[in-house]
Image (cartoon, rainbow, N blue to C red):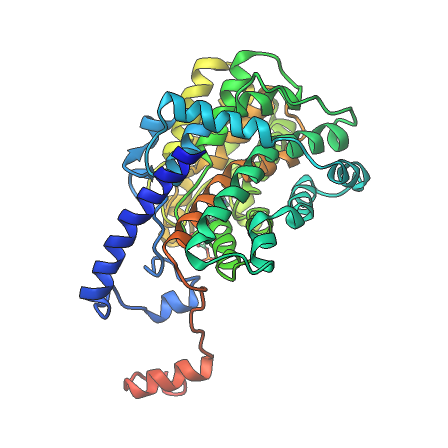
Length: 436
Ligand code: CMX
């Protein structure tokens, strides 16, 4: 792993030099202002973080380093993990080395197997997944070395990388065990060192032997791996890690954020949404029926899952990449057909909804991802967010490795009260509450 470490170090050094220059020359230059609306509106659009692993362009979607989705969608998850950490794709030898490391580190400690088997079946799979990662926390090499007083600050990132390799290697085994033991009520399938990381996950789930299923799992892992620094799960994980809580704590925390219906759980909700449509109208609903259904949902005060985004202002390129996969491998799936019809119907309705207040009426990745998993036999759709979580852990890990390599401090923005804000506005001679 020396070459991988060297490449991550090289990247940290380059970024570090840039940061030193920016701080030396421009430490007090303002990059924007904060409006009252942003302060009270989830900090939307506020530039307040630096994240060097990936970037989301509102009109072009996710970029990892300089690569847009079409340039990395056909890569292996391991290659994308490397890219997130080192800022470059691995050579053939570097890839083989990383794959070997993952195989070598995939084995779960015996106590975790006991823990997984003893979890109550009724827990949501995302809860089980997060608990399992938390239960591995004592294995953190960073924690052990830190507690032993053996670490200097400049070494933190290396230990994060070590923890990341151990964690990422084990995720497919943990997730597949949860799926088989608790959702299928069957025995787990052994890890196979001869398979790549994504194919292993596909194989251990044991739902579909087709090669295209492994291809889908790899694509799923690649497309969900990171989405810059401000989304709920990545931000949570980074904040937790900034207190030097180890990557197991940070990952579990990030996953708990991903579990929300406005974030990663939306893929599960989307599948339920499509099933509700099929139950009502059959598997080939007309666009008029969909139009009625969507309007009814909005009238009942519910959001349309899989539509809208806090940053994107176009159809999510991850949605498009999945659609291309679906068109190639399962064009006749009734679920995919309904996703397509919804794509035709929903944006027009959302554009007119709430007087045009919906900032992005187009689909995000969650509008389609579950459909493809369902087609290939992952019919327990409360597992879909776990799949998202396995992949998103790549981003959590890479963001923390880079941030600690750059010596970034604990995250601690300032909050204010309504009273503070009112006094501030008064000092600006803004009209007061009673004058309105
Ligand atoms: N259906 C109905 N209303 C929607 C909507 C949707 N799909 N998307 C946005 N809106 C509404 C918001 O609820 C908000 O209404 P209020 O002001 O009355 O509360 C209004 O439009 C403006 O919201 P926005 O600025 O367009 O969107 P936000 O940045 O606040 O929220 C998101 C973004 C994703 C939470 C929102 O679009 C949503 O709830 N979508 C459905 C859930 C979903 O698909 N989530 C997954 C996102 C991808 C991911 O993170 O995994």
